[in-house]
Length: 101
Image (cartoon, rainbow, N blue to C red; front, side, top):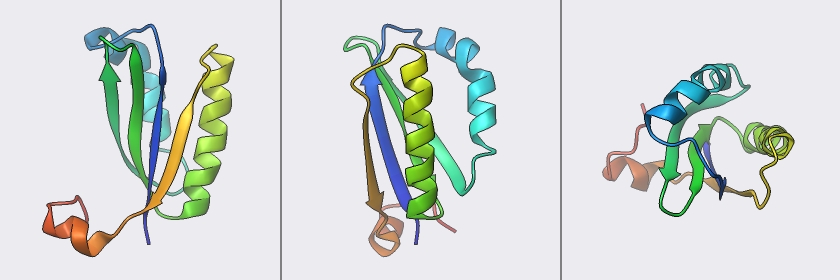
């Protein structure tokens, strides 16, 4: 079973290509997290929000990452971090072109 982690938070920026420049090293490091499969980065400049949708192999991997990531964001001065973990229904998701093998 796979688990989706949804994280979002308020952030003043950077956004767009400036976000790419600022967070490429962080993005590359996420690939090394235990149980990590993929991430979709999210941003809403108008609402000053950012976050991501992650896929992990196990619920524990998602929980551990959320704990670590929340602490990292807090060290950057970010507060009001929202994180939710969901079990993926792969059968239904596959019907709707979910990225599963």
